[in-house]
Length: 68
Image 1 (cartoon, rainbow, N blue to C red):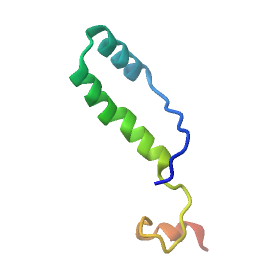
Image 2: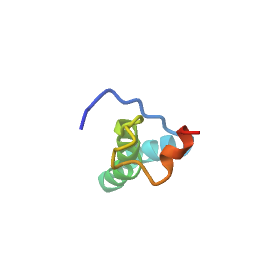
Image 3: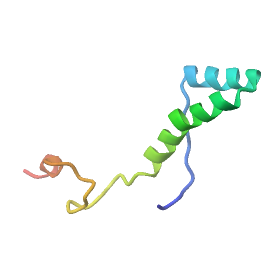
Image 4: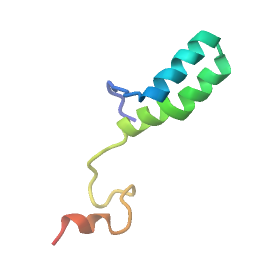
């Protein structure tokens, strides 16, 4: 996996969740938040955006959007 700098954007509810976790000092809730929200965003950001047609990650019919 190629690692790179990732910018994570949080919506208002996620910001509130982080602040609540901080106030409560709830380690279990913090880990759940990281797994649920942050890890997902990081994985999405690291996923390749442009892949050749022969890549396994392509879905059936996905190439049809680019051909006439």
